[in-house]
Length: 115
Length: 115
Image 1 (cartoon, one colour):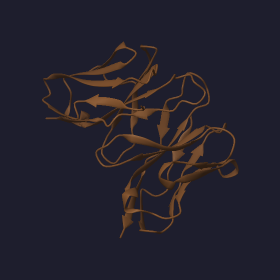
Image 2 (cartoon, chains in turn cyan, purple):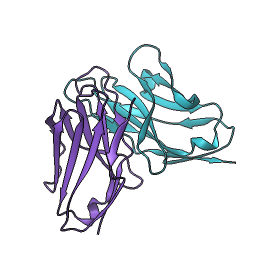
Image 3 (cartoon, one colour):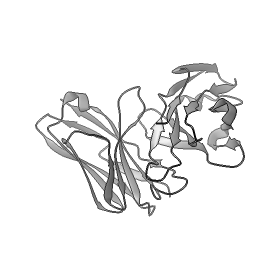
C-alpha cells in the first residue's frame, strides 16, 4: 500500500522568506502526486499536481513542487511567503492502478507566516 | 466552474436524531466521494461512488448511509451517531474514478457536532 509522509507538522516562516514543505511517498511505482491547501473552516483546494513529464510543477499562488524519483520526494516551495499563505497543506498520492484512484493524504503541515 | 456545494455548513444533532448531509456538483463528474476529517488530521476516505454506484466503502459503520440519487447529487444519511463522529465531512468529485489523472475537487465541508 502506498503512503505519504510530511515532515514537520508545523512550519513557521517570516513574511518574505522561503517556504519549504516536505513530502515523501513510498510506492514501488511512482504515484500521481498532489498538494492541497486548506484554509481555516474551508475545504481543500488543489495547489498543483504531478502526473508525468516535467518534474518541476508550477501551481497557483506562486507555489511550485519538484518530483524527485531518486529521493521519492515531492517538496512544495514558494520563494517569498505572504501572510495569506498561512494554512494547512496536505500532500496526497493517487495510485496509478485503475479502480483505486482515491487520494491518500499525508498528515498535513500547518504553515505560519510571521509579520 | 469547479464548485462542489455542501449543505448545511454546520449541523448539531443529538445521538437519537436522523439527519442528512447534501453535496451537489454540476461539472459533469461521474465520481463522488465522502471524506471525514477530525481536527488537526488529514481527510479519511469513507465512500466512493462511480457512475452512481457505490464502489468503495472503507468499513464505515452502518450509522452512516450514503446515497447517490443522480450523477450530480450525493447524500450522507446519519442515524444514531456517537459524539466521536463529530468532525468536518468533506465531499469531493472527479471526472471518473478510473480516469488516468483523477483530480478531485472538494466542497467546503459540513462541520458536524454530535451531542
